[in-house]
Length: 605
Image (cartoon, rainbow, N blue to C red):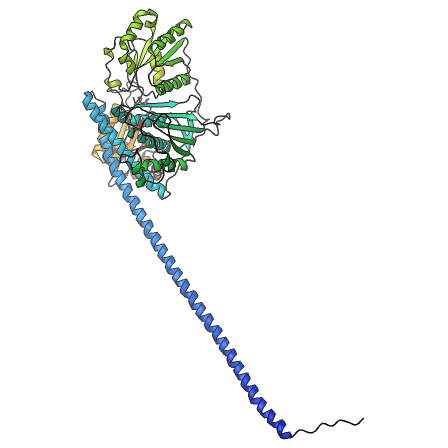
């Protein structure tokens, strides 16, 4: 086969193409480098801008954080300033109230005309209401800032309940209302919880009920909730508190909101009458802090009910003292108010006394006859003052017609023992007890009293609602020597006079320095120490007295208008043994005297 020949290309053309290609390639390479460089620059620029943006955002975030911190610090300073102002205001108001309420108590211990006693009782009740409102404002502020704490310690359940009813008794009496306290016989009397907060909640709710009830009654019922008390140790006792009244009903649309934050909506409530609703809002928050529930409803028969469910386990460390069982004794309760009959019956059941209850005079006579037929040797009739006044003549005829009934001892129940003239009745009266019945000890004493004993005194109410009598010390011949330290003339005078009424010999000191001097050369049984004093406060004075006297130092009790939990802890840390808040109540002084002095303090009657 013949070989194929390729024609030779001209050398010039090849060289020309080569010369053209190299510049083009170089150009493309340069362009590529430029594009690459631009992209690198653009990437760097974007990164720089992103970094700058991040730095700007971080700077803004830091600025916002700094501003928030500044606002938070400013708010904290403002809250601290408000708290300090409220604390100072509280201390000042409590000091003034101490003078008002203490002076009223002292005057009510004297023999007064009925109109004078009414005026003083009104003054005392108004001061107590102001004191309650002050506590509400301070506690609402503490709750809002999360500063409030709930205690859990043993206490006797009757004490806060009795305190609430006694505090509201004068206002209820002025309005002509009947107050009733019913404690079911199976409710444990020694429980664990926060007694002070329970008292505050019940006082708020009871005060609200008394305030908005024009006529009729306000009843506080205490019972075990369903399912409670099923275990031997009552470890899960849930106690049901119910406050019912005969005032205006709570509208159904307000049942779920009546305990909310105070607002203008309260003005639409028929139970408003100028109330802000603050006491209800505080009550709800305190109940929830104690782990309980609260609610309200309207009653079918009219009026309203506010209820609380609260876990208060029984305190098993307290010994259970069996109630006395007097032989062959029968008690008949004659009262026109069903709730009052139930209250007396529950108390008699707890005392282990055989009894009946009725609202009919004729039926009461039949019950007494039946008790005689059952070989009862002693008969006691608890007679309501209203029935005694309205049916006194009929009762006298019953006594005259049946000589056997003349053996009956009559205990009169009155809302105003001081104002009743027992001599005006045509039948003998063994004793007079104040309504509502609060203390089973006083009821038992009256029931067991012999004819002619004439125990004409209330059932244990503290001033200013007690009879115009001066209690004598329980231990004759011994007057506890106490020192009252207070820089305020009015508070010092009021405290010393109340202690004198309770049977104490009182010395006075106007400053911490004079208190140290007095304690150094006089053997006091007890020292009542104010905390806020010029030159040397009560904490420093306490520290120095304890340091100088050592084991010979008497118990020192804080007597102060600073009432927060932190204040109490500060007093105990300083070495004080107990705490009394101003304004001073006689019952608090009695409690402290009974606890810390050798003499048995007289009961706060």
